[in-house]
Length: 517
Image 1: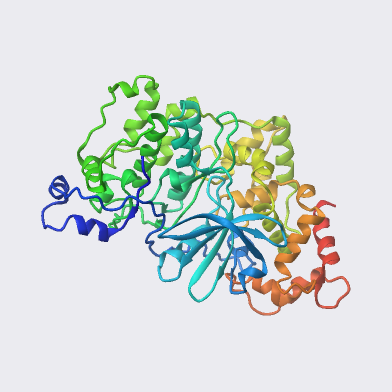
Image 2: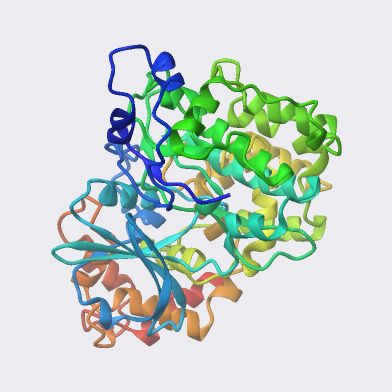
């Protein structure tokens, strides 16, 4: 199977020019090949800002710490290799000079509207199965997006190498992918270009246990429930029939996950052809024969899920949340529970969590999001998913109460959970996001090492002179916060022990160590 290009409306118009209905056009479409090579970026619609907070306090969520900087890229990063390229731009392997961290740098042109909106989406979302964004640089022509380096490579490469996957491995991949998609759909975001090339392995799999992250939001857009989208976009093998008809909703992503599941289990796409027009015709017209010998070794449950994901009528197709409840997912990829001892330890961390200062909270947010490896966060992710029973990528009060009530021998009161929840739900939206959970649950002794504190200090000491000034705090934390007056100077004064108007590293370290005293 070859990689395929992501298509836009212009590609559709080139191939179907008559005024007949789309169905009749596609049956008689010219079968000349359009494009064989893969590209990974296309058009995006405007992103709706869902973070209108009434609380005048400074928001120190992940979104507010991901900055767009105009300083020279070479000041902080060294380019050490190529990771890929296409019509979307280039991806380079880079090393952060101060932190000695390897990252992936995506370079995109400012000429397309997609770049900035992709950045806006990535800054707002936080999920264990979606790539993490660190910072952005820009010059007059391009954006340089710094993301985590996922050393396991593309899922596409793993499929090409393995041929097909056993059901246990496939189910674990599908649970993670559906978790990510369900989270996006719950936040009214549709990806629109789900394919194995846009699913990365975090590292080399152990015992068939593939850990994945979804990347490339260049085709993503927000949607309004109940309102159809018309823009033609996607990649030929994975594109849903209703997208070809230019009237679709978020369930186009579910179709794409069905194609990916088919690939994982069978090793080839369900709809193939000599060229893209032929593939599109088959997507519209061909029915899959599940009695074919190629399916004989598959479980009845896996075939049932395939049929329910690859229903051509989106109204009859499962949603991402419904797919997570399917018996095949529950049987072959059940939630793995963390030990009761670990759970109690984390719940006790949640109980003790309180904001000492907005500055220290910002530092903890930085450390948990950007200075902790996937291995270090592995058990916390398991507990997060264990609590997030519905797979929406957030924890509700009911989730937290249930988890704590099951873990402790003594009775947990709803009032106690209410107080804990209130302390953690920093943006007061009624749910605990993954980054909010991390900064409350993490063992502060593990993150407040000398090395990690120096890295955090460097984030705020933007001019590198060894001191943090009020204007630097404002630059790091104030871009999306409408905070006026002397708030920043007051934040400095809270930590400035010698009264010289700035914070040096020792004062910074003293502030952070109060979190574990």
